[in-house]
Length: 532
Image 1 (cartoon, rainbow, N blue to C red):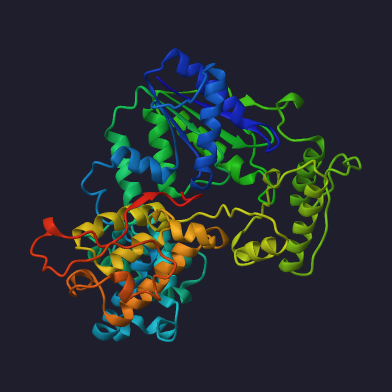
Image 2: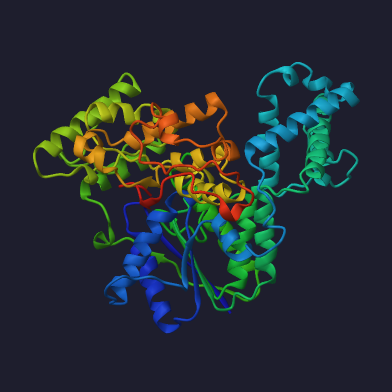
């Protein structure tokens, strides 16, 4: 029988330690089972490091430690983990930009074919950003598991008919025509969009594939942990969680809650724990309605020794809970120098104040830069200010903003490495490879003797950019750079390659096959220091 258990407590309590204690105990009993530790995507890496360190300590392992049966994943990564061999899952992923381009094309077609259909959006459809707004709406519909057929105007049990019936019952029948026209446009765009992207997949499509896989897979030896999900799940995520609870051997869910809300009314909507309480009751109702799911008593964290922060931060938490209710905390925090508040007129002034404080604390010799963490609710507003301001204060900074893996230097380097050989050393491929900074030649002896390599660490990259300018100006690329006749590449391009490594002399013989190609670029032997 599958089991479901919750770990409840406010954010000041250490939920992860309780989860790891349970994980380690289960692993010792069944080391060959599969353990899935699911977290939001933005904390996946840090959680994976913490989980491995925690297991290493609890299992009393020494040396380097890795786990093949414990996987720390997000929902999107879980889809790849389980469905990577599915042919449909391997279809190209359509990005948000690609989706917006498809929607823009559909809108243009509708204007040409049925101009009256867009009469409700005649003005908006001409404005920049309309296609992007419609694309966001389509993504929300997909995440809510709403199909185009559900929006069909002639569908008796569809969303439009039900909405019209509720409007008529509420005395808003005059709005029915406007609503119907708008939903008809959305239905037509959504229907055509689904037909246009059959050769690609979207993120919601992959979530649906994951759900189908979970419903058919045998998860009797799989143990699931869900941690750090603060808000409600989307409709597709909820279905995935439901499938895991029903089919996995056991599921443990950690929620940020101030109390156990079993058999209690939900708190008011302005309560800090409203969303978590609603999620808690939804999961409880699902489990109690399913046959074969046993709900265990929750683990409630309420002891002082279970907290992970100081008393000063506990006081801040209590103040935030009361402020959300427009009230004062039950007990006022004691005066302390561990927490400070200040206001700033602009974001620039705010960051300058923070950077100055960090510099002052590091100057005392009791702190290191790695001891500081700058946290904000929304990073977008500070994105362009962080690095310039911290650089001005000579503070090394790492921005933990999510970046697509496809544009990472390592992925670009790997793809370009194979393209260079496949496409016969095209100039664009070679430059793309060199610009990653992960492949540099040994420093020539003459540069070492002159000291230029030590004074300017960007010597090689400067030579790469000059060489690229030369190739673009004179049309050098591919076979042209290899069959242009007898001559020394370095002599012909002495100005561009002044600071570069030695380049071998090219012969004037004509290349007849790939097997006798001369080596057109220097031999690379060591990675760039600090490269990743």
